[in-house]
Picture 1: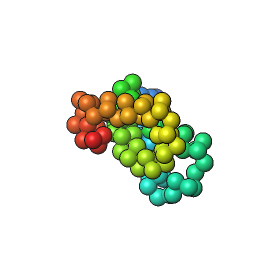
Picture 2: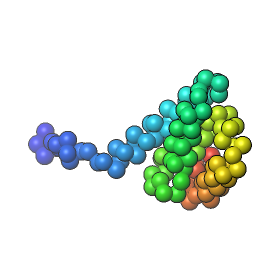
Picture 3: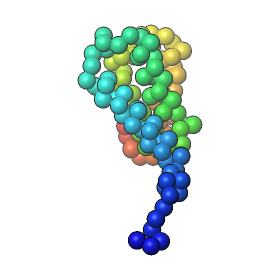
Length: 114
């Protein structure tokens, strides 16, 4: 069809692609946490998952899709975070990020964080 051909470079949107990739990664962590026992992961693996999820929830994350996926993922990851919640600094940071999400301008993010 004339006039409808686009090159890969014209179709590739690096910002949208990055957001999509981040969303998929965080959603994957969500389902992993839902399906396995907290005893199946080493603390270092738990820390990696929590870091990704919490970073996805921060206000610095511009994509609402990534933020929503991260908020939903934290719910499933909480059973893995017992050791992290025993550390006051980590607990306070996680709770601060949850509270930031609770006042988001995005309705689904607010609802999921609460």
